[in-house]
Length: 407
Ligand code: ADP
Image 1 (cartoon, rainbow, N blue to C red):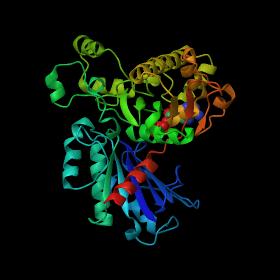
Image 2 (image 1 turned 90 degrees about the horizontal axis):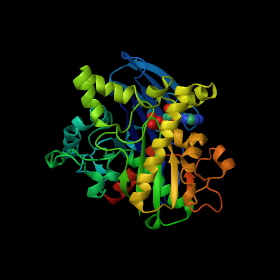
Image 3 (image 1 turned 180 degrees about the vertical axis):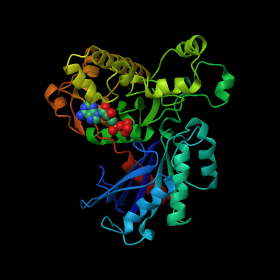
Image 4 (image 1 turned 90 degrees about the vertical axis):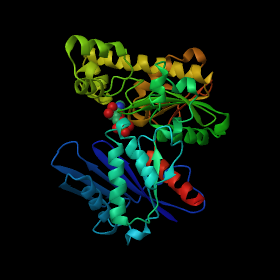
């Protein structure tokens, strides 16, 4: 048995969970974590809201100082003390896995964290200013509480896309910029890779023989074109702002708009950053919300801007699926995952409708049941369509398990 703690640091939240993994075979779907915790800094700046729950149903909620290190120390303490205790002592934890958003060009796989890896994560801060510092703080906090001997693993969200062909990874801009690291990295790699592997399992096929398009549609949205288990194209690029329309992010827009706004209206860098990342997408167009559920409600009440937001979302989703289709030269399965992908039958139906000319058809009844880890295509559909519940934390725990087994 191995106990693996996973830390998934967001810009304003920190999710953690503890898995127990048997030594023989890994189950092909996620077991329930023994313990899960979330720290949230979204609602208050002066303190953090903490929520802990265990597999046995024990829960704890608290508000503590806003300091990330202190919050992590508090969380860890609930693992071995109080009503949420699931282990007797800290030394029972075999390894800690961190989701690191940006691994740059260098990291194509998960790695054991040493001084060199920490320096690399620090050097990549300009490319992931909200996330990489949070990872470094998490790594430090673990070391302070669990000691320097505990193996810590970095699992990069960019790694899965790191071997995309040059033509997909390079922007048509001055070559010196490419040499400075301005290239397409892609994100959500942990989720895309997990879904590809899970899809192969659910289809009873070898991943090597499959062409897959994975649609990760959450607050952030991206697609990946996956051939033989490798990402060969994706919609996010240098930053997670490229590609599909998202909850509050614009996705791809004509860069000439930014030049225009800076020149004609005197927009600053920070204003443009805020408008494109926080005030665009579903939220910006509808004026209602970044949440697809509220867009659906507003459409039902006849709100035309909510309808427009939905229509743009679908239009862009279809065009990007088309682009992935062309990169792959065909597709065996289309996969929907994350909050919208797993729950919105309307988005899945509308996206698939654009591809009925390929013989891709979904079963309307299966689709409306929003069935996790099911094939919703009709029996005679030429392309399988799967809904998969993404399990990023479990994927991170698995990567740690594999690395430790190899070590
Ligand atoms: P993140 O990208 O932050 O991990 P999620 O994958 O949890 O986010 O996706 C969150 C989004 O999923 C919400 O903003 C909401 O738009 C969407 N969502 C969740 N449940 C539903 C639902 N039942 N119907 C439609 N959309 C949903």
